[in-house]
Amino acid sequence: SIAQGPMTTWETLLLGLLKAVRRHGVPHNEAMARVLDEEIHSAADLELLINHLPPELENAGAADLGNPAVMSPQALQAWIQQRKAV
Image 1 (cartoon, rainbow, N blue to C red):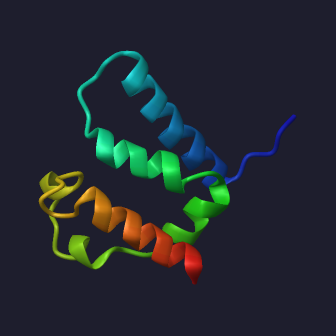
Image 2: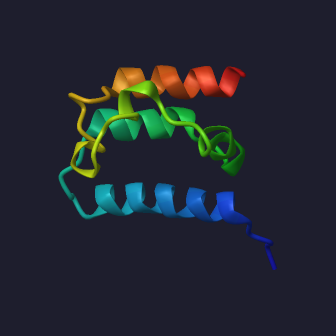
């Protein structure tokens, strides 16, 4: 049996959701999805991000989350890379 901690659960949910969205042809922001493909390779990557909030999202409301006008895919990728480099 595989021991699963909180981050491996989040990794499974996040990447599973991305696969399901693509498989079923659900409209989504492919540029944002590509950032996840390129930057999230393990639960360890998520562990580096989970307790931090990008500056772009500090004053964002729930309706703003996922809006590329609030945080672009390029800004998301740069933020993830910055957190992973720490």
